[in-house]
Length: 104
Figure 1 (cartoon, rainbow, N blue to C red):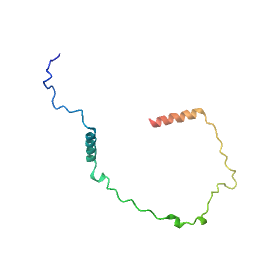
Figure 2: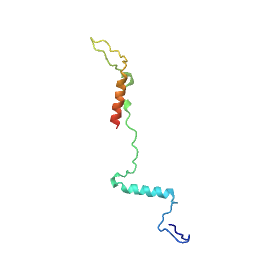
Figure 3: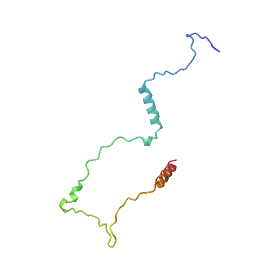
Figure 4: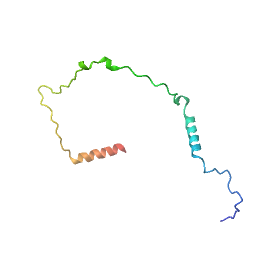
């Protein structure tokens, strides 16, 4: 069913303009977000940066520094030899399936 209405007659009321300045929208959104914050959550004004800390090098003398290396051998045991061992392919796919289950 059609209806002929002259262009001079207003068909709609209370329309909102679609040409809103971007800056105005952003400022309004920012004000709304800031209003939702509790008063104590707002950032305090920046304080003065602290001065330089104490010089820790006065506590050590480079000539008296010693280097230690760990003694990793145990008497009576042969040294450990690291060797690569191939794993069965089904172990790899099992690990993949297990990880997929954990992610789900």
